[in-house]
Image 1 (cartoon, rainbow, N blue to C red):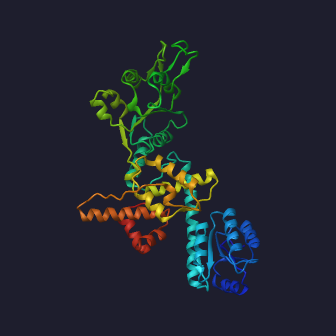
Image 2: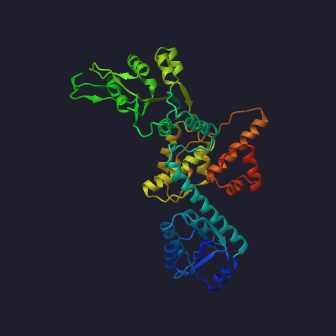
Image 3: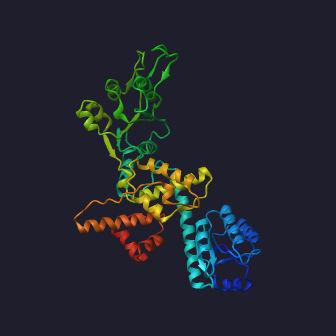
Length: 451
């Protein structure tokens, strides 16, 4: 088998049509199959990227049952394969059913060789792009910025700031709503620092009762209070040499803030019931969804602690302000939940992508993740619909009077949404927007959008 030409499997029982296709597609390494059994054997042996499939196969040449069975089994065997089904005149319903089952596209008989060649070429191109995306995703999964998927300018700037700040020992305050990814960024700060081989210890100050929080932070000696049957090392001490992440720092009680301030100033702690000062070398990263300046003004949070914790402040934008990210993240979550649940959902219907892109996501990335997980479970076929997502979308637009700004923002938003919906495929994005590929490249360059 030649390695220089891509392999194309043609599943067709008409010998005359096989000869026609053989002469039409000399640029490919062709494999032919007349039955479902032969087709599956070729898929197992040669793993073709693209398959053309006639639905009318023996022993049911006048029906579609054998063709649909072949489609289903090939997708189970090689789910990434692009399958193009043949549809005769008046058989549009069969073609649409095949698409719903996971076929890439369809062509009508009698065959127009030029049209079919274009469909096949696009299928190979998409297969290669998806393969590159998977390799890239695997590469990113090994990086400290794992899980942070974005194409939005404001979030890219946040990631760049994390990369610049991480090598230092400066205390960082992450500000953002619930579900925006504060802990992911805290782990990235740790993973990109010289402390990456030391512990990363996190504590959610809002999730621990006030009476237990001091012991969780500083630890206690045996007999320090009723129930203290043994010595316990606190979270701060257990992070020795690494990074200590104080999540929801705005919920720390005022009385405990005094003891925390001493640690921040002196970098020593005392366990509850202890008399010995214990030096601790940790890098402090904190986070909150609250407005600390308001808490300081009302006397609930100490100003001196704020300045110790917020040597550098990073504000994380909500998902609603990260243009295109909702669709990008939705694809990522879909792939993950497919793998975890051993599902084979192919993607999102156009109305689902519209709902995802226009929904305000008050719960941010965490809410989106939960919605996609539910949708993968509830989807009745291979595609997630808007109904599966169970989203109530309100179309409310703010009035902006600067027409130039409106047009530019609309252009950038449309480009990012198109790239997100096509998972970065430039050709498909251009087609989706109704412009030529060169025009699309010019727009990308004009607005400095990264593909």
